[in-house]
Length: 54
Length: 282
Image 1 (cartoon, chains in turn red, orange):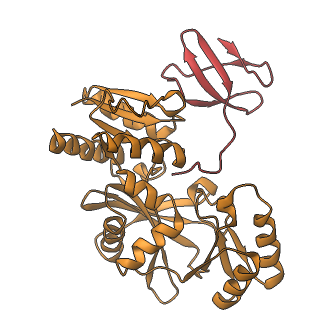
Image 2: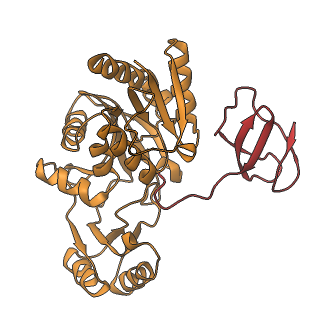
């Protein structure tokens, strides 16, 4: 269990989450990036960059 | 054969691909582009084949160019990424292959771009040469709107925003088509319907199945080959006269909304192609 760096709400991370995955905060909706799994660490996901896409 | 997947953000698509690789017990590693250090004089990389799935065009392009210069096989190839990531280069490649595309013009100053817009007629679409998901794409209906958009772009920091690429607006029937090409086959396609003129599913467009056993499949495959081939998503529009035009080709395709819609296991087909490529280069 960890908390959202934006709103400090409790976060539930899916069991199959992997490093680099983006998960939304269930409380405030902020996009969070899973920075590490052990120990569980999340940070605010980077803003969309000009060259991002498919 | 040592395989790696180059990523930045892990989207649903990357998770589906990872699950497919794991299901087949294919050994591979994940490389996060943000952590990557390419030591240019070393000319060594611990993988033989790299599957590009990074969300960043710039990072992908430079990584693949470096790796290919060291003899590492990349899917898609750097040249394909360079072409697909730039709307002008895509347009030129498609024109060279005589693929039908909307009329388009290129200009470098606001004045010349305004003249170019007038030449195309209204409405016209102004697009950045680099970008995706419909970002910064503007439909202008008259000269005042064109002036506003172009002058706004001219103030932005990136030099690429001042490369003015204008495309004829295609009066499509409330939908466009995304076709998925893997190697020598158009494996499936979807219609993307929206009341908004931008129909990307990333922007809320609704997906439904589009048959590929005809003109759509054929044209998508020709377009994919024109940009160098590989694993590609081709965006097409139908004109009111029933003609098909190719709008763009995407090199790191998103497909999450298209698996159930088409009934085709897209990540499985992608992994098939990847493993074939690995076998060919072994």
